[in-house]
Length: 137
Length: 128
Image (cartoon, rainbow over all chains, first blue to last red; front, side, top):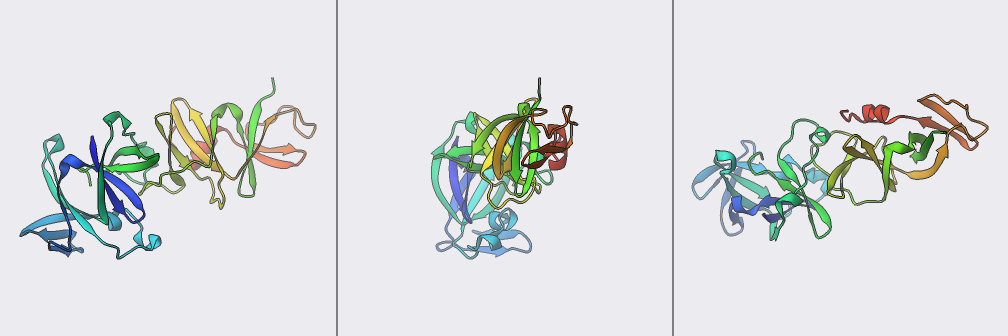
């Protein structure tokens, strides 16, 4: 599996590269966020907005609020149900290849409530990273 | 045969777990923090192809080691401040020759709270 590495606060996450249609640099293209609605418009279309910093990270504690942003146009049809949304991160880095069996599932009992937005954990350069489940973000 | 326990500290408090419950000890492993986890979950660590959740029983300023605990095929980790010793119960004169399954154990240098793995898992909220 090819995984696109994403920076959010001081962490690195991964997402299946096949579902990323476009990486949008907001300095070059316009994305209008409606954060209270959790929506954003891009290229004349409205999308659901998933902001990893806001939804998963405690950015205030991290002290890096206000850092640069990037948007990913995610288009996934895995499991037969098409999904399109914008994923907001701090930056998209490089693509790495990880064998499917090297993605280790997270025991579900560690979560506060049912959380299935992660497919699991993979190892990259000796460090563990979280892999998003693009169908459940 | 005397039962052996592993004695360790978490902060200032001393604990003792049955030695057979401890599969291995990790020295200061790098943990991956996972968002949206229950309180007490410090992170996860990968051991031989298995992702092991690591827990804190109490807030610890300097956690130096992780005990990897085995219950059936389930592995979980416990962060400790300091691993002290393996002790065979009943061998020290201060000890009750037939110590209870839980409660205070007396040693010549103090006491330790003896807990079994199911008690510990209950305290940490791990389903068994």
